[in-house]
Length: 308
Image (cartoon, rainbow, N blue to C red; front, side):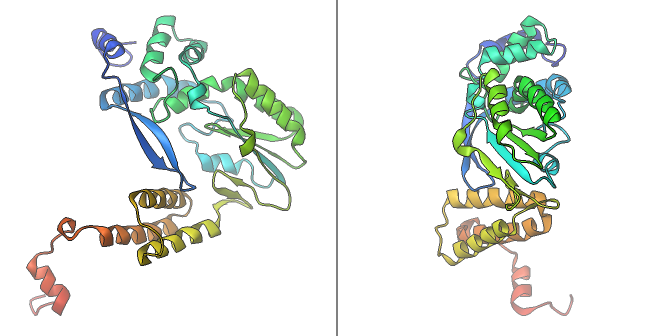
């Protein structure tokens, strides 16, 4: 394993034993404007985890139904459900905290990893007996842990003529007939992997309503809801006028929403980013704003000189 990761054996042993292996808690905005709590590893550990991901884990995260991997995205996930009259979305409750070290080790062993190597990787990728949301390895490890769920639900979907996909801890099923019968199958597959479905977040759409999967509207093609974009634009306008409070939390929330919009509608995202930038410039103390040279000030005040 030391050879695989370009790290000396004694260095790996030290990383496993030393208390510097810590995580900083941070919060980032989600597409709905709320904040997601992450545990970010310190720089040396993060670098090591990136090596683990690139040199080993990525090779084993390859299930067709899994859209949280290289070359896939929430958009490719949504594309599989376009044109279906019925869609159901499920959320796995407390997914990352429910993945304990022994679960990680077992998932790694199923890929053929040696016992000692699996134990070491588990130590380097878990924190406080759970899978930390925010480590670069966590999504890939979660995919390995949920492989049995993907296998079971992909097979069941094929038998019943419906479509199954998963993005991180969100499960999506769609088809052209009511899908109530498939909920029992989902619950059973998730329970066998020792997880549970969060019933309060179970969402269903029928022929009269357009499904929205993780912020993406499923119509003739996946797109972001125009009303969502307009709501963000309106909120930016209200913040700039002082109608809405302009706290650091509000700005972070707006930044998250705009980043999400930019993924699906780049032009709209750029316009909103410019508006947010103007708000930040307006709020910045005078001492923190860039000082223009005197010639530039003259140019702004009086227009170009004869030499220009």
